[in-house]
Image 1 (tube, rainbow, N blue to C red):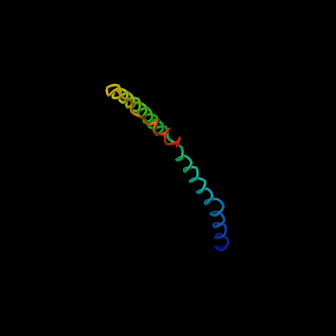
Image 2 (image 1 turned 30 degrees about the vertical axis):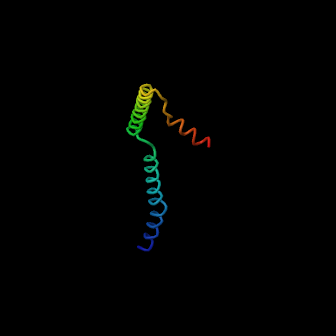
Image 3 (image 1 turned 135 degrees about the horizontal axis):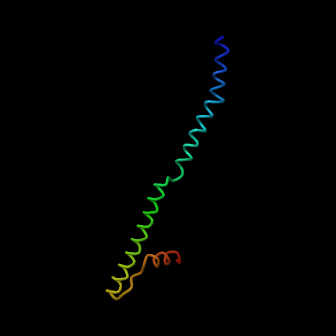
Length: 85
């Protein structure tokens, strides 16, 4: 009698439990691939902060250039020069 139940249990595990576990963890993995709303808000805040800092740095460079009376090459000029060569 036990000889009959053992193959049924093995087949049940192979064709029901194992694929169920695999599909469960695949869906959990896909959920983790996307950003959660908190992460999206944090990235948006970081993006805004970086833009504000960039504007402040540009304003400071403009003030320093005006005070010194000369124009320093900006980072954009440096990149353009590198790619033109």
